[in-house]
Image (tube, rainbow, N blue to C red; front, top):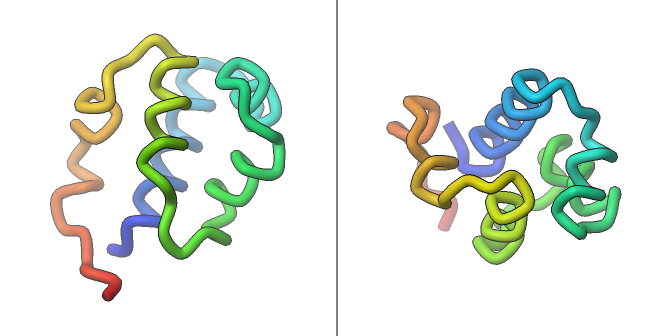
Length: 79
């Protein structure tokens, strides 16, 4: 699985678990709605770690907690 796909799935999972919309997630994390939407729709080929850090800060979770999911176990290299 590609990283952008895994991140999209994880963000959808977080939104479902917390019962929030992607737009609410953007608001909580001080990101633009388009940034979150582009992550969820896999439009970014190489999502920035800084964006993931901002999401984690907005959700009050650690970055390691975000990536501590089986979905990230078999990421394909994209270079």
